[in-house]
Amino acid sequence: MTTSQKGNVFIISAASGTGKTTLVTRLVNHNDNIRVSISHTTRAPRENEQHGKHYYFVTREQFSSLIEQSAFLEHAEVFGNFYGTSSAALTEMCEQGYDVILEIDVQGAEQVRKAMPEAISIFILPPSMAVLEERLRNRQTDSKEVIARRLSEAEQEIQHAFAFDYIVTNRDLVQAESDLLHIFKANRLNLANQRTAVEKVLQNQ
Image (cartoon, rainbow, N blue to C red; front, side, top):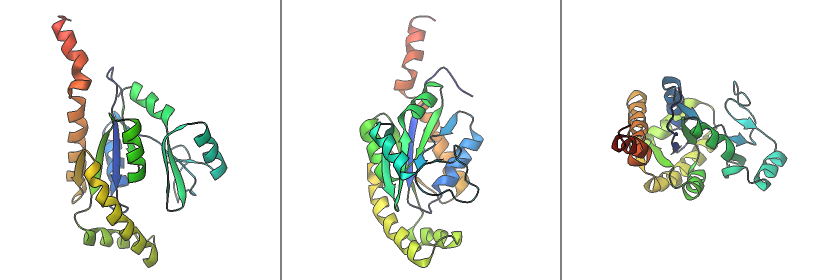
């Protein structure tokens, strides 16, 4: 459900295997005024992924063309594939009153913070590296070599957590989802978003 109030942009990043995608999916499914920005990517669709719902799947040539057109708020290469966020689509959803999630890596998060300082950034932290390794192994989608690489990348990504506005530790999905929703609601009530409400009261409207 949209409102007359403009939506906020939330950057959500995490190391691979932390549960970021699951948490974002739960937030969107349980809250009508939250949407996810659909990224463009050059990687191949995974099983059950749909073009225009999970990602916009494009060729490297198409992606390069969009970069030349300055179509992306941010773009980055991750594990050999390119990902990018459409500026126009993001602006449109915010204008409609939706809070919009950018589910992106730490590289993309840094680009967005520079281009859009008002964006609110959240880093999802695993309880420990041991728990993260266990989760990656339990997915049974990657080889031992890939898991080792992802763990090495995870340590580097977690070091970037100090640059984020909020940290949410995903020990339990229900609690982590509740923590995220509290952040979303609190930012709806900050002065930047409530200035018009204050002015209306002062004007006896």
